[in-house]
Amino acid sequence: MMNWEIRFPLFWILGGELFIDGGYLTDSFRNQSIDQIEWDGGFGITLMTPLVPLRLDFAIPLKKSTGDINSWKIQLGASYIF
Image 1 (cartoon, rainbow, N blue to C red):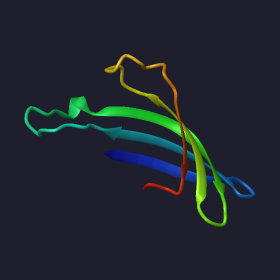
Image 2: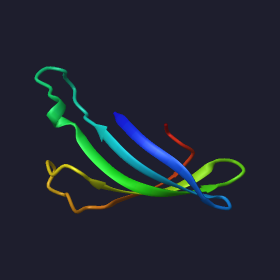
Image 3: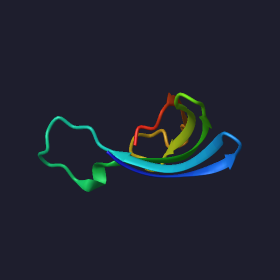
Image 4: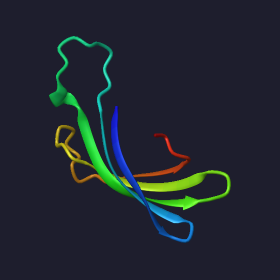
């Protein structure tokens, strides 16, 4: 998995993110190519709480190999993975 992310303050306890993710899941390393990596990009909003940051991220596939190029994905999470 690959990840590029930039985080920036918005105001008060809110922050923003822009990101690009890439990855590939396989059970064998034979016949693998860098062209098989799936990519998505998106943005997020973070609420900085006293315990953990709460994130709401929005992403869309950047490569049309799966057929759902216009399918936005939404993720709600706590903390930073990377």
